[in-house]
Image (cartoon, rainbow, N blue to C red; front, top):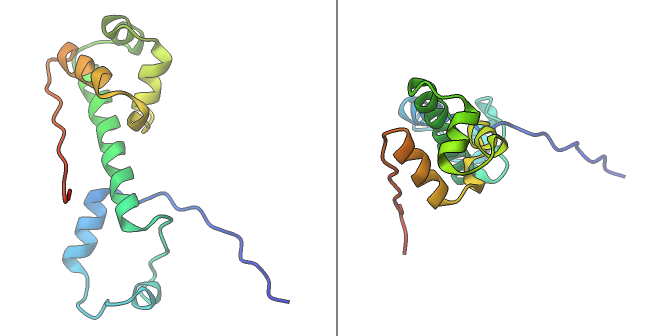
Length: 123
């Protein structure tokens, strides 16, 4: 009877890391086997999901940086955008994907920024 391998969880690499890898990737890396041989571990959901997760992490970091630059605590920002400090904490803990665009727009306005949303490779 074959033994089941325990699934491993991998934190998706930062998009900048993926871009750096792509720039220096040998042209010989054509298959998943080539990548595994080079020491790369599989990313659950594939590169697309890893890139999406990286973009959400980057947004979370941008929100945190902008809030701190504005000199606001999470509680102060929450009051100004009409939500709870728990929602702000969730946005900053690399999970802004579950926040409405309307909330993100309010955050951008309060922090003196602008929210830009784009559809890439849409059909």
